[in-house]
Structure formats: C-alpha cells, structure tokens
Image (cartoon, rainbow, N blue to C red; front, side):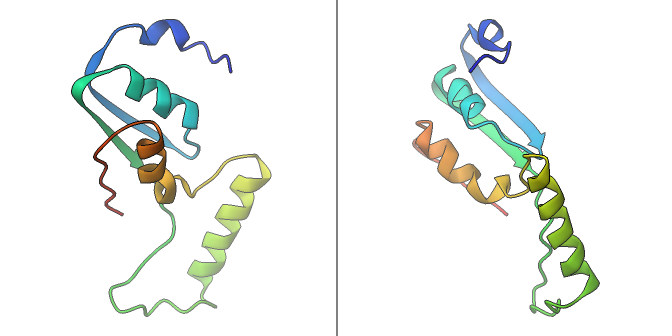
Length: 104
C-alpha cells in the first residue's frame, strides 16, 4: 500500500499519538509500532458514538439509538467505520505492542 508516509517515518520515536477519528489504518499502526524505540509508547484516541449509561436506561427504540444506527450505516456506505475504538487494543497487540490498555 502506498500512502506517501513511507519516507516520513524513517526515524525512531519514543512517543506517538494518533487521533484518526473515523477510519484507523491498520497499516499505520503497524508502521508506528515498528518505528518506536524499545520501551516506546503509542497513544490512540478514537471516537465512539455509541452512548452508554451507568444504569442501561437508554431504550433501544429511542431517537438516540436510531441516530447511532444511521451514523454507522452512513459511514459504512462510504467505506468508513465508527467501530475503531472497539478494535484498537487488538490492532495494537497484532502490531507487536506487548502491553496495551483499552479505556472506553
């Protein structure tokens, strides 16, 4: 895959922060992890539009749930995903990070 970033990531980093919002590039995570110094750190922030409540009081037939469903469908229709936050920990581990934490 050619993204134009290949030549800009030729040095090694101690700390990398990403915030890609809608679509996380699995390739980019792999490249970032391979460019960290030993003991380096990657932080990722992703948007999660699925709302939660501490008492599970949001009805499945609410307007809010309908909006969430339309957001996911709209993004899928243009090849994007709003589910990146759910998969970030797995993607980081697959890229070789030995310790990952997910806080959603």
